[in-house]
Image 1 (spheres, rainbow, N blue to C red):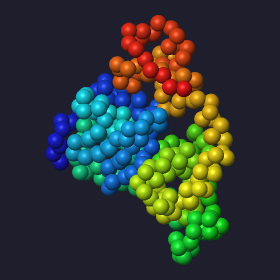
Image 2 (spheres, rainbow, N blue to C red):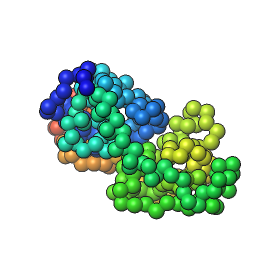
Image 3 (tube, rainbow, N blue to C red):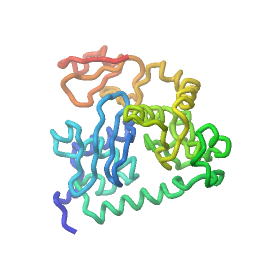
Image 4 (cartoon, one colour):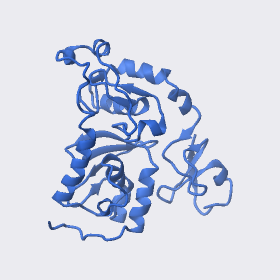
Length: 273
């Protein structure tokens, strides 16, 4: 099949760097439009970005518009959402033809087929019940080794963060990720908190807020850990304490100890606790 962008036999330096960023960032899927369109939000950032995979990939972030190469958001969707191996040449192409798009979609569909099936404990009338009533008859699914959170796409057993589960289908989601998801739904005027997998009622907004307050992650966040951010100097992640960001360079962060040195002292920085 013909392609709009020339086939790249080798990965570019920019794309290689953005792949590295993607694999070390915490990014949330807030909404999906069709099989290859996504609304994303990166941890610690307020701005949201739209990514679309197609004949020519596209992202609304400034880095993509400036460099005309794959940004970390596009790389994240390919590497984390669709689980394409980083060694696969498809991960560094500027666009994919229809056959290649179908190839990565089929791989994703095969992984999610079992997850999207309703729990055996769910009965045919359960969708008419309130979330609190549904929870009494829907069991939480067992977390298997390869299971990933549908919002951040990280494996449950690798991060070991507290999880909640859908009271309709029983699938698991990180509580922190579900909180981000719920805030986006609230901003859109949604009345019911929908599950990112089965699209039915996950639980009530009030119950999720209670879980968020009670779980240990609430204590972890008070320790000022900046997840998904890598110190440019010592490569530590997450950054603990104050996190310094260069006002001139893209994605340039320093931890407190490295900021106190003369590393990259030609530019000014802003910090967050």
